[in-house]
Length: 291
Image (cartoon, rainbow, N blue to C red; front, top):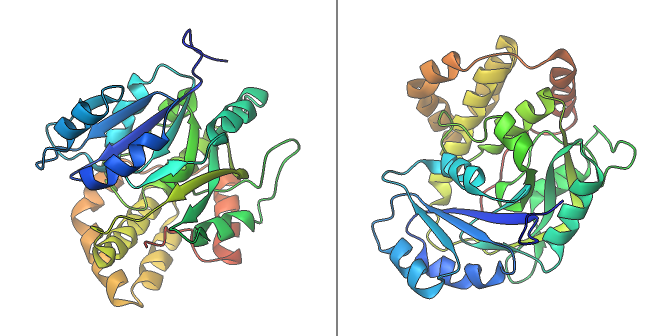
């Protein structure tokens, strides 16, 4: 499956004030078409990108939409599949062609999570270890075990499945936004798999605020549970997170967003809740560990 241009995968990058990272990462994306969605940068990032990389389609948002910015990129993509990249990451040569082959071969696959190698020493991202050991196992013909979480900068989605699931949502906004989407894809019957044959590289930006990211991930873990899990799980999640200072701050930060989470609340189908509960008992919740 491909477009008239022959492309099967579009790379979508959401960014804000990261020109120094983009000048390094963007040259790695061709020959695949690239859509960059700028989250209201105020440092001239979109101007710099358009000047240095005229082949990149730049979409400028009037305000910071967080992870939801990716939704616009997916909507505008003219290919059946979309690969996400951060402004400080890219895909290894051949990875996206292989991803398209896997998705072409199995129309039930909704999302593939890649093996992510971090930094100059290519350290394996810890969440990939969790995904590789998923007790949900691999189904016949699938490229790896099923999972209910992923890392956005190492994910390739079937565009129709992503849009059907609503993409990323404004309740969690950013950081740890992947779990709710994975749960909803599974609820709709799409397979979400870890595919270690796909490789992405991540060189974490020097401008990251790691402590703040820990807090946001804790906040969004609570909000995701509030939107999709039974009340006993919500309480257990909040209690677990409250054992650390960052977790306490995250639980408190969830309170202002709780009304929006409650408006979006609907429980997972029983089989998906059973799978998610199995993950709860077999390993820590698959929160993204920030670098």
